Image (tube, rainbow, N blue to C red):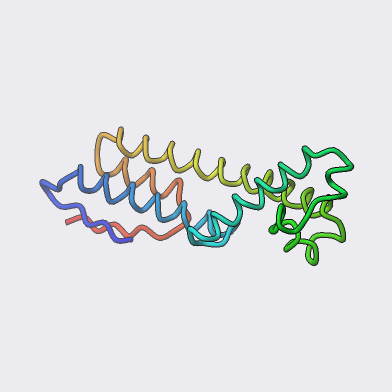
Length: 142
């Protein structure tokens, strides 16, 4: 990202650009823990719903669970265990880890954007970006 503050620079535009850079950086960070795309987000949600529903069943109901009731759990069988219970446990454990990562990233994103919007000048905006995000910010003052 290249910021080029000039005399009489529009600081509102600088802040907006900095906030957009934070959003982009947060998305890159999130993609380290998930697959992009709205379809994948739906699949993750379906897996979580099925795993939660399955774990709430009685043992008899678990033993009689069908592929039509739990298609995503059945799809997980080959990669996460030989039982539906193991597949559900794997999905729930992965979701807990993922949720913690996403919450951490969201906290940094929101706090940084708030700090940027409250920054009194361009140097404070840029300092906040450099402190928070692991990417190059080149500043050229004129």
